[in-house]
Length: 233
Image 1 (cartoon, rainbow, N blue to C red):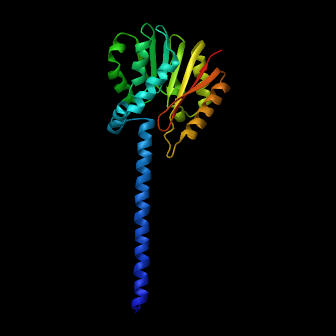
Image 2: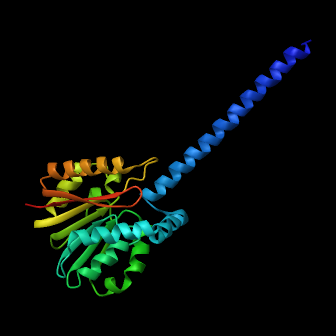
Image 3: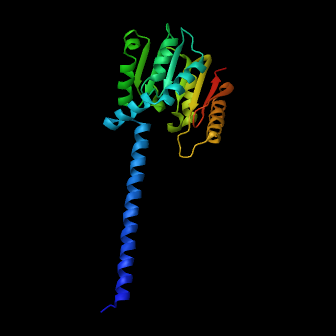
């Protein structure tokens, strides 16, 4: 038979193993939850996606970021504008209020977001000034006319092939058309330096795709938001 000392060691060892298993399970659950939440923000769906859309629409920083970006585009009343990944439709509404005699189109790969944006922009949709479509940026639909302005807010990080997307967007734009790529890093520990790095990357991609007159502007949120603008020659 084991003595008390040996038995005690066995019990402690088993206890440590059990605790380790429990900690591992907790970490696994947290990781799975984080992945699930991240997945919903990338492509909202179901009831959880509805909650994500509700949160996106109400968060003051989201509203401020979208309205600020729309202002930088310099939309004219007769412009044709395209937004990539319109989410709950905040920027779509701001764009349609500027392009009063033009057309604002949007594509989003989330059915939930299309429904939310449709409700938010119902009047402009009925008037024929807004056109919202369920589609991915990798498979853009056909549009009747080229665009004067293109906007993408915090969506480029989800594009599988950014180079191909920028080339496709440029083909959809008129000469001297303007594009705005907006980024507010959401990774853990994001800082002003993270924002600067994101801006440099987006500027480099726009240049590689043939856009010119690249410039940027920054909105002082936490972390800061950067908008990189370019034009079609």
